[in-house]
Image 1 (tube, rainbow, N blue to C red):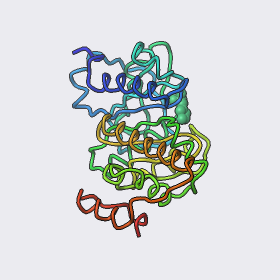
Image 2 (cartoon, helix red, strand yellow; image 1 turned 135 degrees about the vertical axis):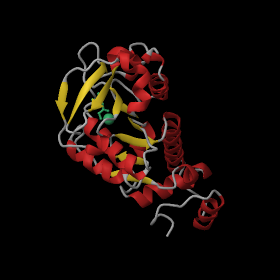
Image 3 (cartoon, rainbow, N blue to C red; image 1 turned 90 degrees about the horizontal axis):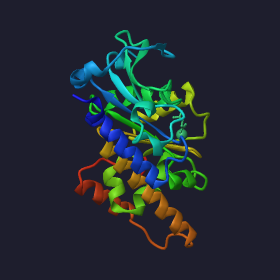
Image 4 (cartoon, rainbow, N blue to C red; image 1 turned 60 degrees about the horizontal axis):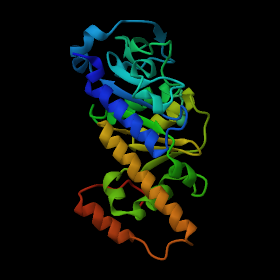
Length: 271
Ligand code: 13P
Ligand code: ZN
């Protein structure tokens, strides 16, 4: 079977184009990783070729044996669909969880995104929190969520509540709220650990003055989650620019919404 027709690859190229079209993927901004189980990789094994082995900054036994389709560092999102073999790569976490090998892609000498620590550590957190369901981690430079991080206090409860109030879908789609990180140096292990710590409780983590990390069970779910939060952020900025709220969905109404849609609001947001 042609690996370029594999669902994980078509998902990646399709969503990369949509991210560019949304204006969130300027230049090389953003990166994506998809976890692929050894079983899912079986039909494509003939396309793989074990290459360079790289030592991970520390062992990740929870990911041992897993494959990850990862965008390359410096790759422009608008070019991913037309040149997947150059823009993307698949890494295989070796059985000891201490190293990975590139087994496909990066055909012109590329390497995985500089945000690989944040991606892999988020996968560890979400794999555990979701009982193995979550497979996608998506980082992108969402214009309005970034803008909001300049005007709202950087705490989970405030930002989550403000977004939930913007439209009924928000609480239903992200009842676990949005984790918030103060600005940190990108591409480092530290921001990876902090992101993963928040990913234990949230599917969305806002990197102040930088972008958003989203995780979930498939690409459509994660994209939908991010575009909903981003739309809410856009509306909030418009409301602020128009002089602020005159009325909004009340705490009691948000609680009724959660009850009706059978979701549990993140602790501390409505209390
Ligand atoms: P990469 O090009 O290394 O993926 O970095 C882009 C980015 O968004 C850094 O946060
Ligand atoms: Zn970024």
